[in-house]
Length: 194
Image (cartoon, rainbow, N blue to C red; front, side):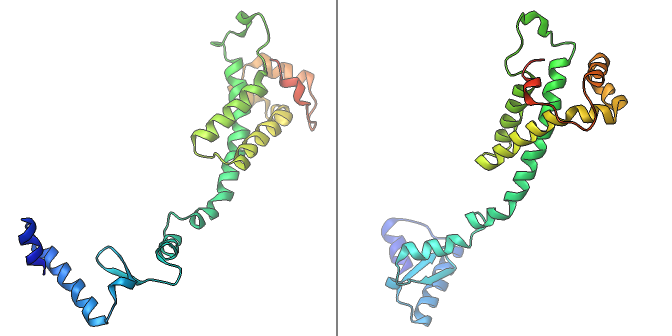
């Protein structure tokens, strides 16, 4: 039969294709498989057609695939933790960028809207989105991490002023030590301007 088809269409058939076709035909004839009620996935896998039709067979097979939705569920906790960590790191990064000597904010003649809190939130959300953490829950986790770090960052300054002074300007560290108390939380309105 294969020779007749290839002769009619002027096609050349390789030995591997002939062997695969012969093996498939043998499987069909030996197993008494009705090809009208069988779905073939590739050359090796034949599935009898279930009562639900072709769609049901394809959905059942797709559910076993590694890229199915069920395979992505265990990583959801990792995404939340990663988003929270990104949010916690975004506030000090935004604050450092705003306090850096190369960034001259006095030239603006007005306070930057949102200040370090707004910049930290924007940085956390954009970074989360870029890394593929696009679910609303992970974006909220990133925002919560930023808000938590903003309210308690001065406690880190009190706990390790020398370490913080290696990264942030010394005059800002001294001002923070003088104006805040250890073990307290600052209102978020304090971070809307620099």
